[in-house]
Structure formats: structure tokens, C-alpha cells
Amino acid sequence: MNDVANDLAPVGDDWAEALEARLLDAAVSLAPKYGWSGLMLKAASRRLGLSAADVSLVLPEGPRDLAALLARRHDGAALRALDHIDAASLKIRERIRVAVLARTAAAAADEAAVRRWSGFLALPTNIPLALRLTWESADLLWRWAGDTATDENHYSKRAILSEILISTLAIQLSSGANAAAAHLDGRIEAVMAFEKWKAGVRPFDGARRLAASLGRMRYAG
Image 1: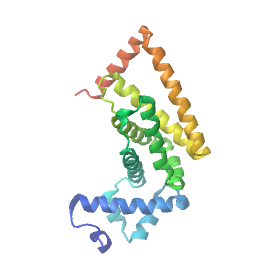
Image 2 (image 1 turned 90 degrees about the horizontal axis):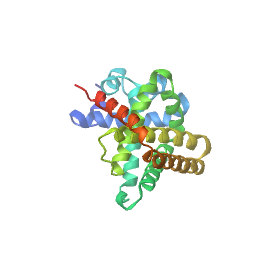
Image 3 (image 1 turned 180 degrees about the vertical axis):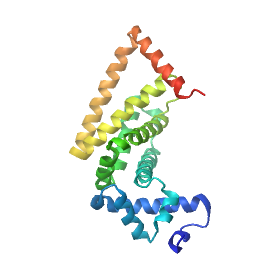
Image 4 (image 1 turned 60 degrees about the horizontal axis):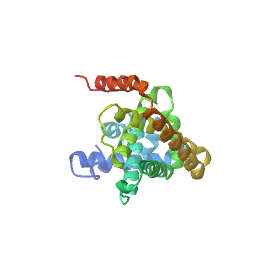
């Protein structure tokens, strides 16, 4: 391990987290030029004076690991932005609206890099990672909103919010913040209308039982 890496932190996880953060900072600045790629990671490593062996210690999957780090950095930024808001004082649709806007704003702060990051995650081999990261984001936002569901609603809420997060960010990148907010309002209105209708239609109990069964399979021993 070279002196640059050794200087980051004394030992253990603190060192790894510091190195990840520095590599991610470099990646965000280099991604617009190199794309979200192995070439970008090599350029980031050179900028920090790190060898391939140094980098592989903390990023064994290379750009995929960096992609996850960026998503989680934006999750953290969104939660910090929401920290001063009392979720309990808002209606549920308002909680989801401010949560999604906070998450989208966090991503937009790195817009040039996020464009390349999004393209990387859209590759067929990376779609499972993209879905997992989006699910994590949706879960964090629902927890901030006060959701405590453990039945099938736990899964349906996160699935719906995952779609909203993906589509709202796509509109943000293609058409800007105002268009993204308008799209978000429309999606929330559509979901709320569907949920109101669904609540009065008992045959949907079969679909709820199916979702519950899938949930049990997810955590089966």
C-alpha cells in the first residue's frame, strides 16, 4: 500500500471509508469525460496516486462498487435535507413528494456524473444492481415517512416508489426540475387514486395474498 493510501486514516474501516470517499469524489469529476467505466476508475486512481492493488481492496467490483457508493451518498444527502422536516406533520402524499424531491435534488447536484452513472446502470448486466439500489432508496424514504408496514404493503409501497424515483430522475435529467416536479405530482395523484379505488374492491384480496406469499418467500430460511 503506498503512502497516499496510508495517510488517509490510521486503521480499519475508517481508512476504507476515507479511501472510498476520495475515489468517489474523483470519479464524479471524471465521469463526464470518461463515462462510468473502468477507464474512469483508472483515471481516478492515477489522480490519487493509487495502484490497482490499492483500489481493489475497497472496490473489488470496480465501477459497480462506485455506482453503489454514489447512490448511497445521494441517499444520505436526501435524508440530511429532510432532517429538519417533521414528517408526522404532513399528509402521506406530501411526505412522499418532499422525500422524492430531496432525493432527486441530491442526484441533480452531481448531474453530469449522474447522466453517465444512469447509462452505466441501464446496461443489461447492471440492471439488477440498479433495481437493488433504487429499492434501498425507496426503503429509506418510506422509513423517513414513518412507514412501519411489515405485510405485503411493505413491498408494494417500495415497488411503487422505486418506479416513481426512477421516472422522476429521468425527467429531471431530460427536462429539468420543474418538469420533474410536475411529473411527480401526476404520479402521486395517480397512485393515490388507484389506492382509493383498490381499497373498495375486495377481489384484490387475492393479489394482496400473492404479494404476502412473495414476501414470505423473500425471507424463507
